[in-house]
Amino acid sequence: MSWIVIAALLLAILVYISVGLSLGRKTKGLGDLLPLGFGHRARVESSREFSASTVATTISLATVVIAFFELAGQFGIWLFWTVLTTSAGLLLVRLFARRIWQRMEVYDHRPTLHEFLGTEFNSEALSYVSAACNSLGFLAAFAVELTVGSRFFAWLAPEVPTEIVVVVLSVVAFVYTAVGGFRAVIVTDRIQMISIRALLVALPLFYIYYITSHGGWQASIDRIPVPVLSPTFRTGLVSFLIGILIINVPTYISDMSIWQRIAGSQKPETVAGGLLSSVISSAITWSLFALLACFSFMMIQADSTNNPLGEVLQVVGRTGTFFSGIVLFVVVLGLYGAMLSTASTQLIAVSHAVYEDVFSRRRREKLGQRMESARELRISRTILVVAALISTALVQVLSKVGFSIADLVFAIYGSQVGLCPLAISALLLRREQLRLMSDWAASAVSAGFVIGWGSAVFGVVGNNENLVFLAPVFSLLVSSMLIGAGFLVSGAWKAQQS
Image (cartoon, rainbow, N blue to C red; front, side):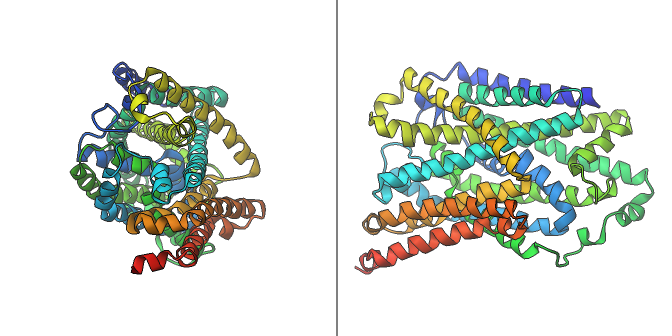
């Protein structure tokens, strides 16, 4: 089993490094690394690419796949609520897609989400604050992805030291992303979706094989705890449903990685068509993962303290047939393809935000001079590598505090949802109104971020699951209240009437 797992990881590493090196040879300037303008290599070329890449951003090894298997015993088929809300979140972006594109066309380049908010609200402080808060969230998510991936691998192949796996995965993630840039992220996202689809064929086939060789369908279904397949009320359900709703529906419209893909598209049809396909594709993909998680209890014990997905793969490995070996290889390849692709999405988002919204803004050099600069390319790559190193240290702190994967999902993405009221306001209101609310906007982002993380931390330390699940609610509520108060107190509503 260990050799199959190692071989699958090595193949994923080889493919992703090859993509990075191949594209890196064609990356000559900053415009080829980051989506800053038209006519450069950092781009999304078709609606099919946009769709695959967007769905790939919603799927990660740590915060989706493993989290589903960990939560299946507690929430069962209520996991399908995550499917509905994710599709609804992408559909919301689709509804605003034309307006986002039209607002971006006013600029002489492709702005980041934070630059867009800062410019529309006429607040340089807002650009810094939103970039900092978003970057911290992405850094934490990147660290979680790598750490969970390394521990999961060490559990499947215990003879390989965890420290070595952490180093290898970290190096691979930031090397191919730093070398190939945004274009490498888009290409590997398409590769990720191919490997995920292969996983979603292979693992159900093994489930069927296992069922037919272990007593048939009825006996296998009877092994699943009744609450898993029943939509009954259970402890923490209301907080979970509300938290997931707030995380998934508003998040994508204020997600830096989604805005990067819109900025990298060369025409509006790419965005509109790609987002529509993303809604359907994400619903199918997430539904299959939810089903696999719920039906995993046909093979494993629901009350086990071990990682449920790891136990499923242990069952696959112990079967010892050629078929099960192929299934194990395909599943591990898909899981680590998802991990590396997600890690690169988070890294390129952090690098883009820190370089463009923090570092370059203070130097005040014109973008036109920087676009073709090899020196600026090196600076951006350096920022990316440093960000990767910082995030690896960050997750050790979070782990010592006692955060589980589910806790981190609600803390990381919940705290970022505070940007949503600002993004929607910037798309619906005129600049004359927004500029009256500039001070309130910066306060809304800061307060939402602090309240979101604060609620999650107090929930973990105090062993209060509801506080963790409701972190996104508190973040969105505080941010919305402050931006709403700014709209009324500043007189922006009068400007709307006039």
